Amino acid sequence: MGMGWAWVENLGLEDFCGTNLNPLWEKFLVPSEDDSVRCQHTSSPLGNGAIIETSDKRIVVLRRSNNVGEFPGHFVFPGGHPEPQEIGIVSHQFDKDMDPDFINRKVSQEMFDSIVREVVEEIGVPEVSLCNPVLIGVSCRVLNVRPAAFFFIKCNLHSKEIQQLYSTAQDGYESTHLYTVSRVGSSCCATECGWQSWCSSHEGVGSDGGVRLMAAMVNDLKDMTSKMPGCHQGGFALYMLMVEAVKDV
Image (spheres, rainbow, N blue to C red):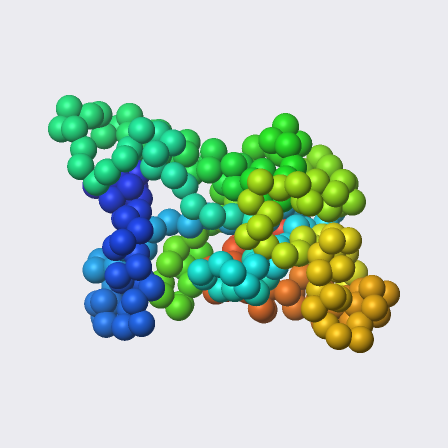
């Protein structure tokens, strides 16, 4: 079975809710060191995430809305999941005459196309501002064993431009703040509307005080990733491995 077929067959939302998101999800696991064996009874739809680097060398991080189903209020990198419908697959039933190699190529391309769509929809930047995604690895969180493919994408926009575009992002409702964080320093910037929203929800905190307090709470990227879902923590670890590998070249 090719990777593409495995990915398509494991994308059922009902299956995901019934296995990975089931309160008894651990009972679906098979004792094994091999993840393909260990997770053979779970849906495990493949998610995706992107480490976005701005033109001024900052990393984009979102804070999820409290109204979303998974990990409300958590820090995350932009992302979501591939869409089978985008390549003409609308069910688990396949035409026997379909060429598996062709489908696998389409699925592979959708993995790259989908992360670009997610970034555009979630942070509002135009697609032309993004370089081609670079797959840096697959992370699997411990909680409900969901895998996610992580990509590194350079954006040719300055962090301040991205913060302005975020206010009109198509899927901006899924998050409440956009942060652009220095990977090596200790500074953190957020959208003005994000600050105002956060400050207004905390009695007695003015905008200036809110900026100082939030900067102290999330003073670097490493601190923020410690408050992310496990698969996004893994995505950050993959990114740091990439950074170290580039240093050695």
